[in-house]
Image (cartoon, rainbow, N blue to C red; front, side, top):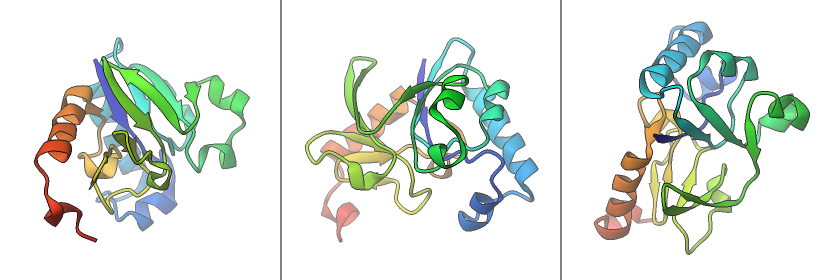
Length: 169
């Protein structure tokens, strides 16, 4: 199966506080993120992580192949060679055919393509859907990766059913 996520921020106290995550401590957050991930993702699955992974050593605790899109934190903390030891790396923006469906993958929604369906992160729980995209971050999806099937459900809803009241500015 194929999954998407972003903004796990493993081992980052700042995110726990600024995102108002419902955990008692960073250790509690890390444990729940790992548990939710491994209860969702199997070893044979692939996860597209759209940036801001956090402490890369947590990769050792997670199931599946992880394809990491470089977020705004990765290169502050690690070099490309360090990241390549843990992940398959892609950079934004990336056009991708995943499971037979076209997506535009970005970390920051400001980099969205106006005529493609975008998957993004970066803004945590501030906005889950946009006119042409979905926030796949853990803060919007019960602190776990979401499946391609669920992404496609949101894509259909966004493209065919949501109206101006959802997207009013």
